[in-house]
Image (cartoon, helix red, strand yellow):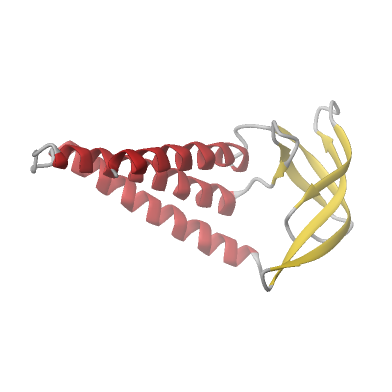
Length: 158
């Protein structure tokens, strides 16, 4: 069981850390999307936005006339985006950064808990104080990051 948790923690950490790097503006090709149109699709009782337009990187090296991002945007607006290594787009900002940071920390937290479970299965019952502090710090900062991202995201929606 602990090996499975370790794998889940590692995958979640890798996935979320990659998106965090784009959302925080640490990775990707920066540029702007001029929103030409938006459409909505329905799936599972929910509606999902898809906005299309032309992406131009700041250095002018990349021009994508068929850029799409799955975010509700205003038609005619120019939005700052980062192009990923896969050719998709991420919108950088504090809400997204906090959300991806919280998921990254959750992955680390899951991995640490799996190591702790493996340690306890070997008969060691007492958890070293430094490990308890790391786990408590990760849990606390994960919750704070999720809270900040949620509050800023909701505030930005109005």
